[in-house]
Image (cartoon, rainbow, N blue to C red; front, side):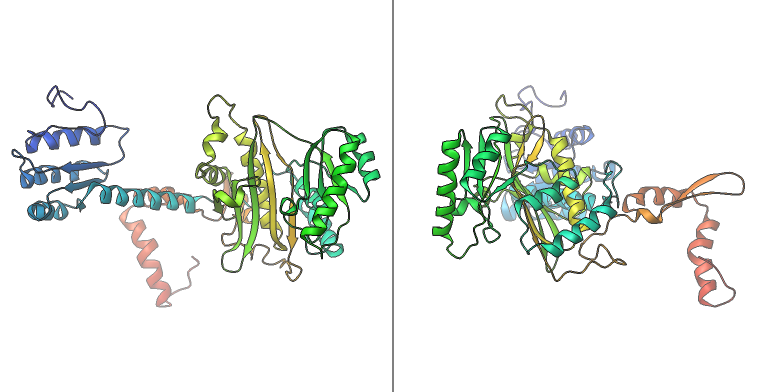
Length: 446
């Protein structure tokens, strides 16, 4: 900045030096505000020999009318800055005792703004790329839950996930060690063995998972060890054997956990976070309301501490976040379509640079839930956009129009339209017609 001495900081924060007069501080602030990469400015003043707090506050106040960006102030010095604080506040500039308070206030505004943006997102009732036959799947799902227990088997859970386009590893049931050996030989080594029990939710907690089994001898040993250990940890559990599936491993993969849970207050909620056996230990997770669109799904991922690993860290390849977002969207529509789902866990979901695949899955059904055909989304806090009400029409003069329910993001268009209306139009729309209807002077169709 040519308006500053040669020894200014040449970076952010901009140090205008201790001998700065009020106009220098104001000019530097104005230049920073005009930078397109600046969203807000915090002006910090410390009491020094040549500092004039009141004059600086007055100069900064003149900038309020020149910008729509927030200006915040922190005049340090306690009671000696009382008059300067009054000048700033009267001009509409919030003044704080410390810079930390100002930054917290600004980040609160950022969070509030982001939350408003999320509320303006309107997921579609049926996303364009979603091509599954939801009517047929609904019929098949109802048959499954009528025949199954409350906790669906891993095999059944993965069939439901696959039906919504979420890739999974296929498990094969084995009631004996001999059967497990035969299955492993058919699908190829290495394999994974997991305990098969409707009463065991977290298989790893009871020693019910063994990975990277390389031959038939290890399969026999793993079968015996898994079933015996599960009985020791949970004697009352029904043990039906094990499931055998192909070992899926990648040094470049990130493990995530995805879940659905129906809350008594908020309805069905979607979760994504750090997966694997440490999922509950670190608690790195994000919650969202289904159904999701791409923007909402991406925001959930970006809020995770593990997100830098997905983008590629220290030479590792960036993971296929586009595929991961598709999985989140599809899972959210599964949650929206089936209020009978009380809980759903995918842990882990393995995400590599090429794909995203569910290695384990579990669905818990609420047998007391009855889907209401007239209100199919009664279990959701936020309803999806009603696509069925969108209707193309043609006017008598041949003009093609699209009639649809209004969306939150239509607000700027609505304001622009109102801004182009004449005073007479505004009077007729917002004052004259409502008054006429209220007085019953003549029937009006609004």
